[in-house]
Image (cartoon, rainbow, N blue to C red; front, side, top):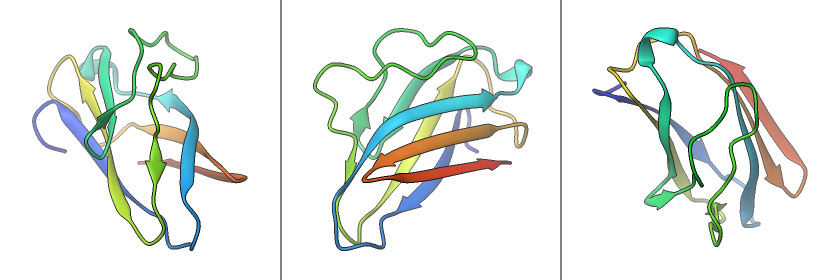
Length: 103
């Protein structure tokens, strides 16, 4: 957590490129305000403002990929200072990997 951002390191320990195909924010601290941005490494992901309880819509042309043996930060930017806990995410990657957790 740093300022208005919270991030997680996602490590692709496989020998295949994986693509983030779906990102759901299942729980988000109310004190954070709205989710304004989502980034995978240096790539912005969001197309418009996400609606509560819906999968985030990726911008057209977003590759959202992690190369083999690469680690990238998934960074979410909030309207206000990001809290240290109260997050629950579900990420789906092709080919067929789902990560979920709460912090």
